[in-house]
Length: 358
Image 1 (spheres, rainbow, N blue to C red):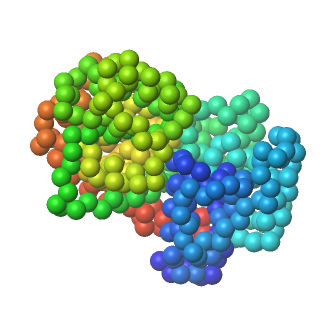
Image 2 (image 1 turned 180 degrees about the vertical axis):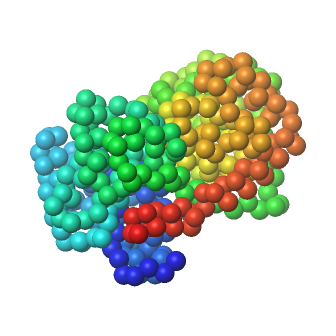
């Protein structure tokens, strides 16, 4: 895709581990490889970068750390930093991610003449607090466009804002390279922060109740509930068969060697980790929460979708995957095909560029 010289500013809270951050960095890296595009990535906080940036991406961050000030002072300083930076860069368009930050960005860009595009990254109808629940719909109407991750999210935005320029664009899913010689292992993988909505504790109970003697369960990620889940694994007698490596940078190595990806999240915008597992040929099973998993999994064709809290059915389908290697292979191959055809980085990148620079 050849595009005339244009500047794009992408704004995110920080380059820390997380789905929002990972997608923004992937888009920035991919945008920067397009001829004629000058990409500026602006972080609202200063800190260590968890994800790698392409050399062509021009990175900006504040000179101060957020813990050095009280909340009000930090907010004022960050607002000033962002507004000055946008005036310096003078991008044609800006793209902001996150319902907690989009209103802030829209206000900072007001009156500068920049076309502002925003996207919420959490489940539809989630509350960001009383103030933002009132402010977001009002300010979102001032955006040049809204990007929804799912059809469900688009409908919610339409109801709340009445905006006429809403586009559904899924997340880019990294294509995990798999060697034909690689033999997958009897591993059930789960990736995500240890927070209440991810329900890793319930997955532990499933694992303990199915016939999985020769299998291991691996949890990747960190979070406030990790210690609690680790303690539960010991209590259930699973200490020797459950692993907690934490937040790792070589997550693809785990996707490659795992036969099954088991997901128990009940709150998703667009589940990146589920898509990544599918791209690596894992047989996936997931709760069919309000939005997200159903955009990726076609039940019974490339994985299993389970009604939330249907414990009996989840355990039954998980047991089916454990017992039937051919089923896992079939689901894995169908999953890879869907991700490649619908969510490749170039496909999603071009949809974004068409929308925010068109």
